[in-house]
Amino acid sequence: MAEGSRPWAHELAQGLLALVLLVLLLLRAGPLHPATLLLAGVVAFQVGVVLALRGASSPLWRKLRLASAYAVALALFSAPRLVVPALGLTVRDDVLLGIDRALLGETPAVSLAQYARPWLTELMSACYLSYHLYFHGALAWALLQPVEKARRLFEWLFTALPAGIAGYLLVPARGPLVAMASSFESPLTGGVLTAMNDWVVRNGSAVYDVFPSLHVFMTCVLLEYDRREHPLRFKGMLPVAVGLMASTVYLRYHYAIDLLAGFGWFLAARRWWRWREGRLGAEGSPLPSLNSIGRRSGPFRPPVRARRPP
Image (tube, rainbow, N blue to C red; front, side, top):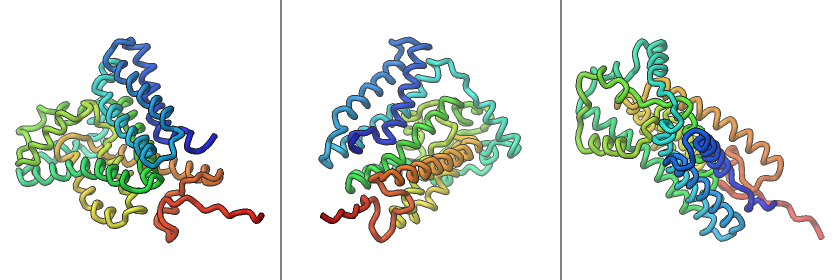
């Protein structure tokens, strides 16, 4: 089978999660439940795109195939809002809070409440919003690059993302801001960015999107990519990423264990990806490994095969 006709790694990861959820929803919630219809639509859309574009050689069509993974990712990210109630999954905030208290004495969201100031809340809101600029901006920029370079980021990012969403469903929780509302004497106040961030979270969250922290998991995935492919962007984003991760607990969205899980998910994804690259490299994969990125030969350049003498 030609390499271009095979499903790409992120398509397999996204498809597997969507298919498993669809089967569970059909068995538990029925075919007409909104969650079932959502997942059926995701599966149908992805299968249709892959079948229609798997043999495409035009860079434009191949980039369109990559962009379709972004649409699938948005749908999968929103799915827990419907899937958790549809499957009757138990919300586990008490478990996550118990782990934090066992490790730290108290969850950081409560411990940091005494230091809350409007200017600090505004700064933390800016850091939290920077995740969206980083995530969506990196994908948009990648689509302006050569196809294989863009594919490299899409495969790395969207192979990891379904694993994080699976965590939302394995340990559904709503976070300290909702589950521990009575523990906070007053709400956080700030300025324009605080209001904007609050609107984004209220309207764009998956509701049960706490464990693991995707703000940590996906930021680490992007930093790993940039460390090799975009060193200047890596250096610029590294201090921002530190503030971003701190903002997740200051703004009362996450427990400390969520952040640790985000790091753990990243290390596991990185190890798996390196194993996959080594395996595919041995089989003549057209994609370079992470270790080859940034070498003098140029990033994401397919290896040149020696021609046999006539």
